Image (cartoon, rainbow, N blue to C red; front, side, top):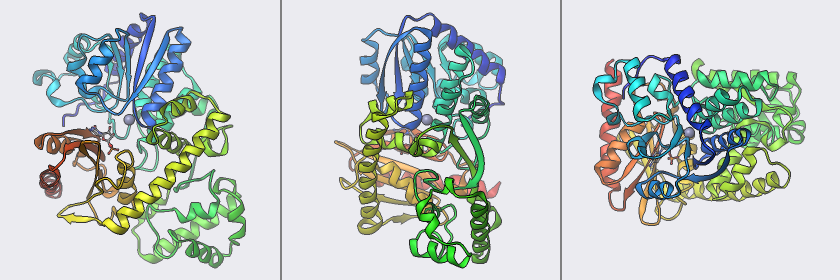
Length: 484
Ligand code: C5P
Ligand code: ZN
């Protein structure tokens, strides 16, 4: 993995070039990645093109392939790729395109002699890939500092200026990609985008207890789902939460009728202090306890189910994973009313399916352990569109004991792998995307991703070999880290 110093100038230059290209188009096709970040990025791109008077359609894709690219090329429309494509630059030559993506390009695509000189590099990339804006090239982390929706917003801002709603969508995209996980708040370029949303009055930020369902669930459930860290005997079980509240002098009844967001500040403070005391008593380390608190991002004036930016991201993800991509894009673009109601129904069905899948994996299947890696193979029992979420949830539960978790599930004719890094190891030198891509390619598949979350598609029957390679590379990387 190569890194260079952040260069604001080079990033601005890339944005300016892309803006110029876009402005010369009279129609466009937006191609976005199939997740919450990709959907918000798509909505930002579509609203931007609309405002520019450029007629545009869109397509949401799981991944690019030679076939997908060939069919896109045959439509002879200029394409704006969002949250996807950075790994396919050489194949994009010849297309009229603009690209805003936070995934890292493959190292082999950048000639070795220019990797050290940012000036020369920027010139070379502008010749080769004029419309590409890839902040990773200029030293920004695509895992923590900027999302696909974020880069797309930066380009939109270059053309239209500051826009509070589009900036808040970019925040939703970043949260959908879990970019706040390491520190409990948005960092880097994400923070600048956040400040646009706040300045325009679309978003509010506050420090709060970190759990899920701040505005949509009863507060008592919000407490139950506190999981980073788990406080044994307090969170994760309904009866424990009630006992804990009574012991702390708070009547649980009020927390059943209201959401966490609606509780009086004083009550929240009392509950959080009591939680921290419990965590200390249990012997959790201060740096773990501090993870209980983080920033919450509220979309001002929105309905309950999407007021919390993380919940908005989750709703979009649920739609996408149930195959309802059009619904997700309409919602992100700003449609409410029936669109929102429908999305909530879809999310309900999705939660049921997720619950069943989790039950299967943690009940019947169980996790296998091989050195630093734990894994499960769900075969046909868990849909391949859900295995990534199941893997993420299990990692948030078992991250203290497992460095890397792999979830496997059958697709039509291949096997989908989702790989997650323990939150404890975030920020270290282990880069899952690089490791997963190498392991997958070695067994005849393909894959990639970020430092903390990666995925692959591999041939049936190659699972053993894939896991073995992964274990070897993960352990090698962890050993190097210890020696440093
Ligand atoms: O699919 P999953 O949720 O496990 O993917 C995690 C991350 O890995 C995503 O950011 C995705 O873009 C990336 N990925 C990839 N190539 C694949 C599969 C996933 O780059 N074949
Ligand atoms: Zn993304």
